[in-house]
Image (cartoon, rainbow, N blue to C red; front, side, top):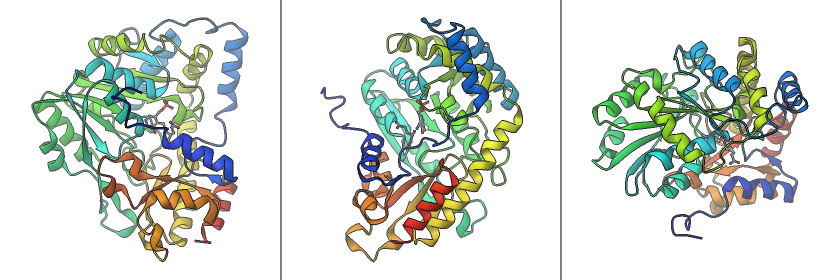
Length: 399
Ligand code: PMP
Ligand code: GLN
């Protein structure tokens, strides 16, 4: 393994899903739904396969139907207009979009600022691009209402400003944020936008959870960074069908940006996979055009699941950061601390959890450079059937 990758072993998601299989525990670790997405979208994929659409290499930028659907989606939900031919690129999931963006835009030695805890592929992709990651830590703090129920992980804007140096090339942002469930507010996004303009930074923004926002607390649901003044021309926005439509195995993602930035990202992407997911691209084009009731439905379904698991985790003794978006709940395990050996060590806690309670979770420390800052936090996924979550809650009472 080369030096760029030496610090990265097996991803935590593979490790923890293997642990779940080995122990028969309920897997609330890796974030994938246990119910597939809409029947009509699966049918659309079958039709594409049967009709021979996408069974051979699709066009490099993505099939025209999907590029048009992505552009129409950005217009319909956010009033952002993108030219499907020059400003949209289809990728093999958001993961490839992230890797290709960094490989295309970062010079060796450039600094890349990422919110910590960060999704694990960010660190590896920055490393592959030869960049230096500069984490800015989200810290437990008060929510907009100031009450215990709305504690959230908060971005310190002064810390973000202080992290920018003459070597900073880009900000790698993620909202709604995995693993904390924080949704950046309009004010926070406006301040980030101002900083990016002032310091002339590019921004790659990972918005794969854009539709998984629980809107009674955050209005309007999702604000793309690209919609802020001065941002459209410096922002690469990343989306994915995996989360919105519950098809994580299809690996269909996309990038929207300016023609120059899309061309740059495509230059890297064409030598990673060239193209992927032919027939699924046609199906996702149909999914993106689903009526508003689909998007409201998945949100409402997940909101109920969030509330069920939040209440169960609280009852079991965890301190819960109730997420405003995504399908993850970050908890603090310290209140469970009768067991000193697991009191503040999320790794040890997660390794022991299948044995102790028959549940698998993810230690947030893997998403930190400042491991101590992440040590007491553990993430649970709630994109599972209600009966599975209820069973997990019952099991966790044993702690
Ligand atoms: N970004 C974030 C924040 C994610 O949580 C995930 C999926 N877990 C991805 C990117 C990757 O998405 P995809 O499956 O489309 O590659
Ligand atoms: N994005 C999912 C998560 O955060 C899993 C992705 C993966 O397995 N690489 O759990």
